[in-house]
Amino acid sequence: MRDKRFLHSEDAIIRSFLSIRDSASVDYLTSRAQISRSTFYRHHKSVERIVLDYEDFLLDKYVKTVKGWRENRELKFYFRQLLIFMIVNKKIILFLVQQGEKKVFEGLILELEPIILKAINLPKWAKTVLAVYRSEILGLLEEWAKEEFLEDNLNRVLKNIIYLTVTAKERLIELDS
Image (cartoon, rainbow, N blue to C red; front, side, top):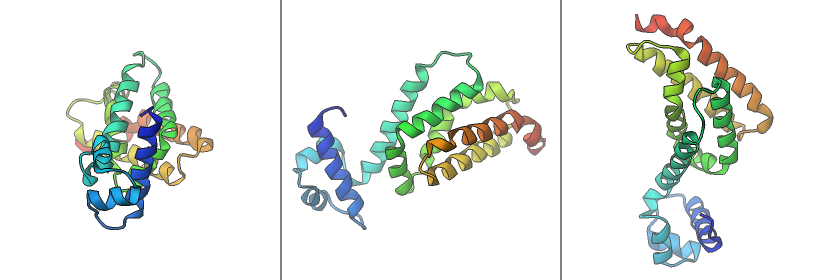
């Protein structure tokens, strides 16, 4: 996504996609974007895949980012990096949320789950605890998205995530007993 022509075409596709209220054909979208069908197909397989392509792109980028982190860091480091990633990629994330794809947050959290499980020290049978905890974190991220990932609120969001994480076992273990 570093080629200027590619980015220009992609921007035209997204602007046209966002301006269309109902589902549209490739012909209609390419006409509005003033690009050729072949250009569209270099970017996406179908109009229906546009949102999923962005979700796949973002999650793949995050997976690569996480793999670059050294292990055995403080838990706060991983969550801070997640929040910074969200700020850096807020345009894509907000586009996905606007399209109803809130599961992107879950994909980001799932990538950190091995680190989270180790930090919480949950028994393997505590599936309900993990599900409720995950929902709590997703709720925080969705609320922060409503603030358009305002950087001034990063420390507040981070503090809340850390609180929910370090207290999860104590607060929620009874759910699985």
